[in-house]
Image (cartoon, rainbow, N blue to C red; front, side, top):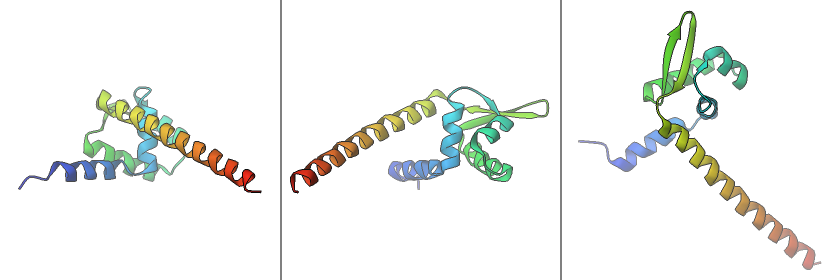
Length: 113
């Protein structure tokens, strides 16, 4: 029996649910990057980065190519970059709403004195 679409989406978002994977995707929005550059930008253990890159590669979100002794990663398509931009917009709106609420709460606190 095929997996329901909502379950497939949940699994997709679960796969994205790791800070290192998100950081890799953010960095790759700027174009292909060798592993050594990803490693210096993210500052995690090489084995941890390797593990997270393998998850992204297996999912088909990133691709890798060997150039001599260097492995270069890139986003598999523009939709992933668009998803990252959408997430940034959503978070920005959420945080703006929270700061407005905080300002309102602080204003109420001052007037209650």
